[in-house]
Picture 1 (tube, rainbow over the protein chains, first blue to last red):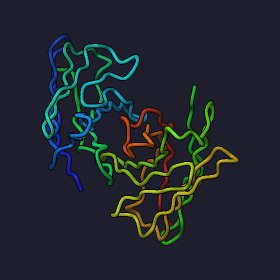
Picture 2: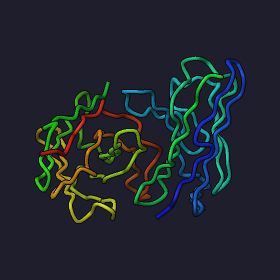
Picture 3: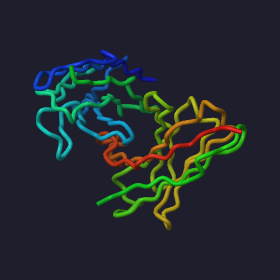
Picture 4: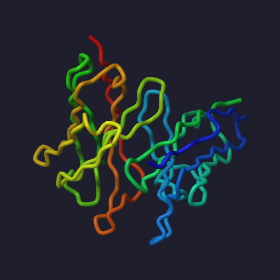
Length: 113
Length: 126
């Protein structure tokens, strides 16, 4: 199984400031035949299902604000919120879809400082 | 617009079988471009993938649950279902169904879970 490890568990950021969340996979999720990274990011607000933000490690889902961006290599990935807004308070999860079992990181809670 | 809706009992007794159904509306479950999955979230905890199914009936399960889980599809009703046998308190969770883009020719998922149901809470208690 590919283990996904997120850090930090939580972070508090001032409105308008940058938030950075890290995700590390226990093995590469880069599919060499197409050079794609099988990594997604989700946002989950209380009482709601997760919402897909980013897939292929850096492609924003339709309708997702451009303050959300993803980057990374085969095993180390980052979700960045460039200018934190009040509505971004949520828990964020990374997930690999390179192989089954599909696995999620433990989540990072983002709050306002 | 595609929508998913989970349904089923909210309370299940220990040792019994949990049964949930996900109804797909606004699109066809028989599309070759998607797998359909179940994910659960225990209270205050993270997300756990349970398993996925293709319209043909092909399934993949999380090994941690495989011996107790069955996912099936009913294309005539545009639904897929989850059964978990011999439940314990550890199976108490919010259960979500979701859609997973898939490429038949490469045999790989093509992105994250892009459409989710609202989730249904299942409590295991006597």
